Length: 354
Ligand code: NAD
Ligand code: TYD
Image 1: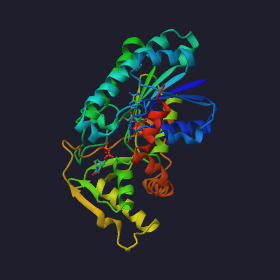
Image 2: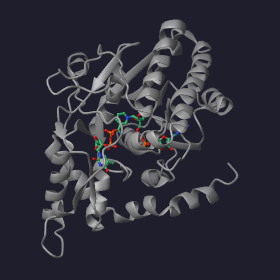
Image 3: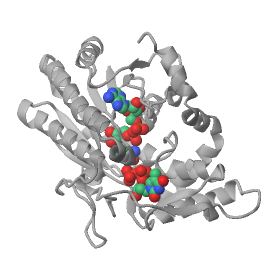
């Protein structure tokens, strides 16, 4: 048996593939375009492992995806592939429309055709799991309850709007064509292999480099934070037992203002790798212009997945953030590679014929 993972060289996808193959011998066909956010070094531990088949490709490439489905006959497709950074979506939304909407549509078309041709028993067990975000629900006021699966979609950024569109398409392919889909909407992830353009890894990396720690606006925007390995275990639970056509919210019950997050990172670095001058890393915090249209608060009610599938996060924020800071301290070469662009040059050469 095989599963097809898209975007499996990115932050969450690579954690998912590593965790999957640590616990199972079921092969993973990993299709990733290797944008700036995709990094094959994330999967170095699987080098030479026949259970991991990597193909550089675009989910929007109908011919390629159709051929891969026909050749490998996966029993499930898990769609992690996306453009994922809100700030990039504000500067240049086109890629987000291309991959998150058009790419998902093309993938759905190929999966629909593949699924329709399966025999009855394979058809009954096949699943398409679409990985999405809590940002589709928009922004909460301080007094509002956390997002449930029935909250209205109110996306506010080009990123969240493109993810919302992809969620709607996935839903429609179930409702109209019967494709057996599952959708997960998760809160902000953090952990190993996180590209240092997102809040937590950026702060860890900048702090050590003696650079400013840029806090947008007043720093009191709230996010719910989930350790990436917990997101991966939730996805495994939904794949195994989720009800077809349903959506599941995934969260860590860790609502925190950004400034608290930055303070925690600084305090851990003060403990684990103090500055030479004995000053706190907190002195590097700088307040910068706010993100346009910045959502004030996200919060996830994850009771449905807990009630139906018995899933709960294993890490608290305190345990997860300590592991995360330690991982970045232990892996400076990974940071150097993703920052230098040397990795991308290597890929261009390596895959010149692809
Ligand atoms: P990421 O940006 O780190 O990784 C995305 C991966 O997708 C990269 O490896 C990239 O090369 C690949 N990719 C991009 N366009 C592609 C295309 N057209 N075809 C094939 N591959 C392509 O993102 P992430 O943080 O790992 O997020 C993974 C998924 O989880 C996304 O769908 C995102 O919306 C969702 N999500 C992320 C978070 C979070 O906090 N990071 C939270 C909830 C949901
Ligand atoms: P981010 O990691 O980009 O995730 P998202 O926007 O998807 O929630 O940002 C998390 C929060 O941190 C968000 O409120 C924006 C804020 N932020 C900063 O204050 N400074 C930064 O340099 C970055 C990257 C984010």
